[in-house]
Image (tube, rainbow over all chains, first blue to last red; front, side, top):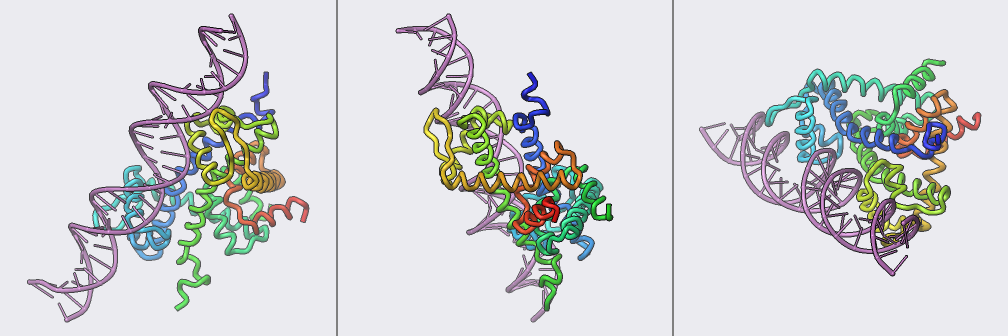
Length: 143
Length: 143
DNA sequence: ATAGCAATTTAGCCTTGACTAACTTTAAAA
DNA sequence: TTTTAAAGTTAGTCAAGGCTAAATTGCTAT
C-alpha cells in the first residue's frame, strides 16, 4: 500500500495532466480578453481586424473565437460592430494582465532579456499556480 | 515610422503568438516521449495501458497519439506490443527530461513547494526559451 | 446617391486530442 | 487446452482552433 501516494509522485501524474489540459482550454480565452482589454485601452474599441493582426490569425478565426467567448459570457458583440468585455471578461482580463506583469517582471529581475521575457511570459503565465505567482511577486519586490 | 518596431512591442505580438501555437503543438509529443522514456526506465517497457493511466486518458486516445508519434518518427510500435522510442524520440525525451528538471529545481530553489513545483514545471517546461532555461540553471547552481 | 473598398460574416474543410462502444488479440488461469 | 480477463484496436463522434473562398455589410469619397 501507499505506492500511489503523494510520497511516490511518479505514479499519479494523471491529475497534473488533467490540470494541464484545463489550463490549455483557458489559454485562448485569456489571451483574447487580455488583448481586447488592451485594444479598448489603447484605441477606444476592439475590432476583429486588430485582433486578427495582433494574434497573427485570419479574420475568420477571430470570428469563431469571439463566438465562443460570447457563448461563454466573456464578451458581447453585435454583427459588424466592435467587441466589448462583459464584467466577467473584464475581471478575467484584469487578472491576466496582473499575472502577466508579475511573470514578466520576475523574468527580467532574474536576468532574462526583456524581449525574451516578453515571449516567455506569454507562454508561462497560463501555467503558473497562485502559489508560484506569489513567490515570483515576493522575489521581485526584493524578498 | 517606427511604431511597429521593437521599441513599441505592443504592436507586433503576432510572432509571439505564432510561437506559442507551435509550442502548443509540440507539448503532447514532448510529454509522451518523456513518459515513454520514464516507463522504459522504470518498468522495462512502455505499454499503452500505463500511458493511459499516467496521463488520465483512455486507451483509445493513447492509440491515436502513438500513431501520430509514429508517423512523426518519434516511436515505433507493432500491434498489441510495447512502444519504443526511436533515436529521434530518445533525443527529444532526454532534452525534455533535462529541461523539466531544471525548471523543477529552479522553482523549488526559489521557495515553491515541491508538489506545486511539480505541477507548475509540467506546464512551464514547454514554454521556456533556451535563454531563460540557462538563467534558471545558473540561478540554481548558485550563480 | 452610389461605387468601391475594407471589414465582417458564413460555409466548408482540416488536424489535434478527447470520448464511448464494440471488437480483436494476447496471455494467464483453470 | 480451453476459457476468460486484460490489453489493444477500430469506428464513429465531438469541440477547439486553425485555414480559404465567397458573400455580405458599412463607410467613405466621389
